[in-house]
Length: 164
Image (cartoon, rainbow, N blue to C red; front, top):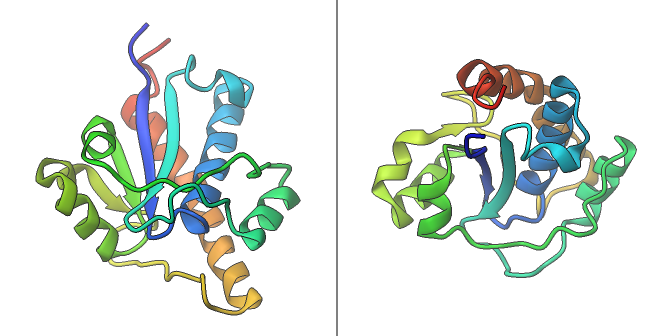
């Protein structure tokens, strides 16, 4: 079996956008591949998250946990971690939410910038909702969720047959 495709979702603090997006992406990939989320790595995809300025060890935001829970997903085990050179270089693809995340990748690995793309595609940035209202957070979360099917299709088109 080939090594799993390593997907890294990157935001600033790794407590809001990226853990939510990673959980949604894991769930959608597992569903499309017909496996339990625990079997996703064996099915060929390892999805994780990090932050460019993460408060190491912090839990996911309460709003992110609530949004995920509404979709049957549990973020209670999430702990924030800071992007490292090894993470960036080992990833096959890195999704960021704004241009500062691409810059954060470049700060740890110039080579990894070429495999870093924006979550909603070029020209579209998803703002950090950390210090914003609950309504703004929900708008951001809905945008993150809306892009999941596009990301799943992209990942399966690029790497879907590696472990079959």
